[in-house]
View 1 (cartoon, rainbow, N blue to C red):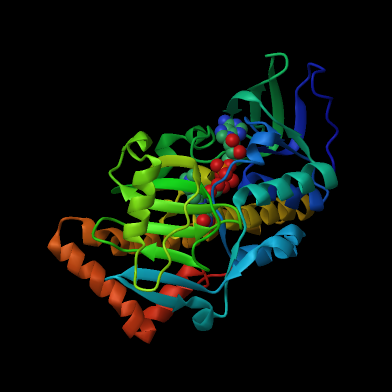
View 2 (cartoon, rainbow, N blue to C red):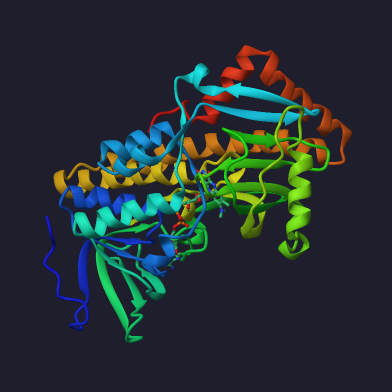
Length: 407
Ligand code: RFL
């Protein structure tokens, strides 16, 4: 099902059934679902292909999300190369506390760096399924998203000319810093925000993982996290003041703090390596409601940001993309509007579940260093309960692997 469209550069606006703004996990998954159903679409991306294929971010993907990719023919490399994790470890009071979530839920996590997934998705979309994608576009603007004929314009990277593409639907998948969200009229949407009041120094080290699972250090000096990414690269986090300057964290200080905050009896010290990424993330989240108006549908970080506290953002982006891709195909191929009309509510149920879990977990990580003895006592009670109440452990495990609702 392809729409006749004049070639780019001919002067006349091109027309596509769907224009997808942003080639992250959300946009590329939507594009792949559309192409698999023979629906023509155009993906617009401000960065180059080389850049998005190398941009490191997430790494923990929930099993339902992987199965969703697999069902859509998008998980072949992931299933061959990803590690499966079944446990995590909390370190507090100088001791290690192992938490086996797969034993409680039957589900596990896949560890697969986000840039590998993006590489797979671009290749499948552009090189295998024949999808059209324009990289390096500038100054992207959405026009008339609530009209029957929305369009997207951009400046061509080669000529600097402004080009306009008409669409039946626009998928706004351009992440937290994109332009799609702002195209929703402010009087018709609500943006609910939450500021955690802490910063995390996000680090990537050229070093193998120092443990066989994700490790959370809840320490009087602040939270620290260890997350495997690949045999050569490991992600670490260190709680820091919001707005802190990464320059305040030279190599020596980083590894000393990681050693202290992740230290526990019998735990090997973190294996040091060159720090190839060092940035401060001010922990915050937001949710846009509704996620769609007229013919503009937001998906992923464009619609909701979940601070990486519980490693949920990429998973939510995939959940949205599955629902949006399937809903668009149902509408365009069969005239069935059920998926599109229920899209926002179906996404938001999982979004709010994950926002709640992130807040709950943030308090567990940061309460002890809040300076408030009441919050500190509550945080430790919450932590201990995971290991002495099977019911509390089961509830945590279900949310940690995202098993409460299905994708
Ligand atoms: P993305 O990945 O940001 O992709 C959006 C794309 O849109 C492009 N773009 C535009 N394109 C056209 N026009 C414009 N005006 C545009 N503006 C931007 C961008 O260049 C980009 O290519 O959004 P998407 O697809 O919604 O995916 C969301 C995820 O990337 C994000 O939620 C996760 O990375 C969050 N996250 C994690 N999520 C997990 O589920 N598990 C994790 O382990 C995890 N770890 C993390 C994370 C995020 C992190 N950072 C950097 C905030 C670790 C970190 C450090």
